[in-house]
Length: 315
Ligand code: TXA
Ligand code: MG
Image 1 (tube, rainbow, N blue to C red):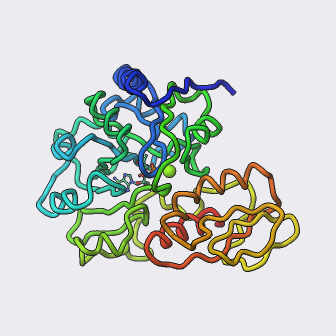
Image 2 (cartoon, rainbow, N blue to C red; image 1 turned 120 degrees about the vertical axis):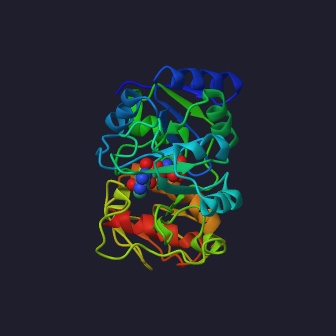
Image 3 (cartoon, helix red, strand yellow; image 1 turned 180 degrees about the vertical axis):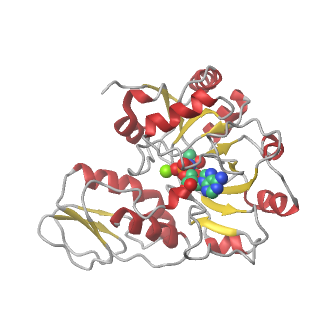
């Protein structure tokens, strides 16, 4: 497998990344959630290269990133509710889905042909500097092969995508470690399409009528298909013991003994556990166990998003 160019995310690296994006290239860059695989969202060919590099089905739309709300508003039909939510939570791990503006310059492929567009302002300083320098809306899914584990370190990107990426900016591990929370603001009632780095409880403070999409409704977020974020071996959830051949993904101070074990958070802290989730899954996966036993994680705060990813990985 060919290898991409990997550079440290210093000023020169960021300038090279911006130039690469402007030239239609693919640049992997750190965000506070996970590494993104960025391309000029207004360039059909560049967006098509994202789908090809990931092996991603073209019915699954991408998130468009900007350095600040000012850079994104005109792409969609923006309203007072979006303004209030963006003011409260951007920059940060939240994605807003809104109707595309009539003259939206973003490639329809980035929206997978939908009438809506997903937008996010990340808080990571490297992401913001890169987006500022590029001066373009940047489409960026997580920088991994479709359905594989999300990358929270530059090395994960290289291992998953190899030479399909032109440049990887190495900004160290991602602090949040879970993808953004996705909220659909295109209808009367705000819908939580994906649990993520911004806990539902916090979002509800600004969107008290936040609802879940009705079961059986058309899939609103095609990326939320049941199987996703999967390692190569089976996952066994809510495990309190370890079977022969299994590795253990532990949580909390009372982990059973196991030959191969990584603890998401010995203190039982869901924020620490989120930051470690994909890194530990990558590391356990590399040991090629027969399976991974996962201890129970409380269903509150970031624990909800962690359990969502674990259920999909186990599906
Ligand atoms: O934290 C994140 O969100 C990371 C970083 C790089 O920003 N990006 C990320 O992108 O996780 P991706 O492509 O792996 O996930 C995007 C999710 C998918 O579930 C997709 O279906 C949904 O957002 N999505 C994108 N556009 C949408 C739209 N117009 N309507 C509904 N869902 C949409
Ligand atoms: Mg993804």
